[in-house]
Each structure stands twice: as structure tokens, then as C-alpha cells.
View (cartoon, rainbow, N blue to C red):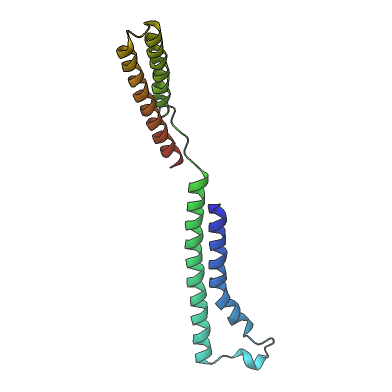
Length: 145
């Protein structure tokens, strides 16, 4: 969607840049005779000024095109994720699953006498789930940035 927006901005800029140039071209006479080929100093100056304006506009357009290309490639070519960045999230989720199972087994297996220890394991499991999720979100922000 961003590329389409950038392309429409480029077309708008092209329209703004070349609209004055098109109006100059349309105001030129359709045919010129040899007598009209000699231009006065004022006409030569105006012609040089128009040529200079055209060069400036083309230069600006080139800079804008480079900027849009840079932005387009930035959004298309995403950097590959490092294999080390997602490992803490997966390890913490694995530890959380293990702590949840151990806490449930202790709570149920002791018939209520090990509720404190089971609660402690469940609390640690909840913290591990939370930390794993935070690491995963951090990883996604770095990759998709």
C-alpha cells in the first residue's frame, strides 16, 4: 500500500513539474520561417531561462525519484532475522509450560497439602509466559521494524 501511495505522489510531482513545461511548448508557433529563426536578445534570454528552469526541475525530479526508490526498497527488502533473537522467547515458553505442568502435578498429587509449592510453580510459570511474550514482541519489532 505504501508503494502505491509513493507512486501516486511521484505522479503528482511529475504533473506539477511538467505542467509548466507543457504550457511553454504549446505556446510555440506551429511553423517557423527562416526569417523567424533569428531571435532577439530578449527572446534568447527567455529561452535560456526556460532551459535553465527545465534543468532545475529535472534535477529536482531526479532527487525525488532517488528518495522514493530508497524508501520503496527499504520497505520491500526486510532484513532477515537473526536465529539468536527468537530463542529466548521459545525457551521461556518451554520453561513456562514445564513449570505449569509441575505446579499442577504438585497441587493435585498432594491432595491439597502442597498448594503453596504448587502456587509458587504456577506463579513462576506465569512470569515465564510473560517474559517469553515480551521477548517475542521485541523480536517482531526488530524484524519488522
